[in-house]
Image (cartoon, rainbow, N blue to C red):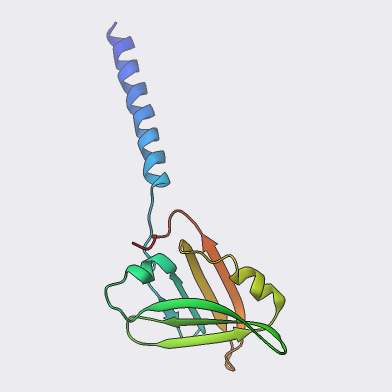
Length: 132
């Protein structure tokens, strides 16, 4: 009887632990303020985290606009220290990626020395902090 009880307690503990572990992962939340790396010419940040920041300086955004020559995307980032970077792209694939941005997105972009976008990544996940 003691062996059965001990086995049951161990099994129940392992099951409960695995369920709690899964639950903790499912509810994970990651704040991600604006991070700018001028040496690598890149910027990143989660829209919600930036919106919720207390400093009032940070922002990250991408804008789509059109002119007589076609569509263009410009991305902008300003970190808590006041460092500002931006880039512009006219390739159609940038328009497609930019259109995926939501208030639950993480935006990352890279740029060259002339201010041309060389990469744009958008990640939308329940892990990114939403705007309050």
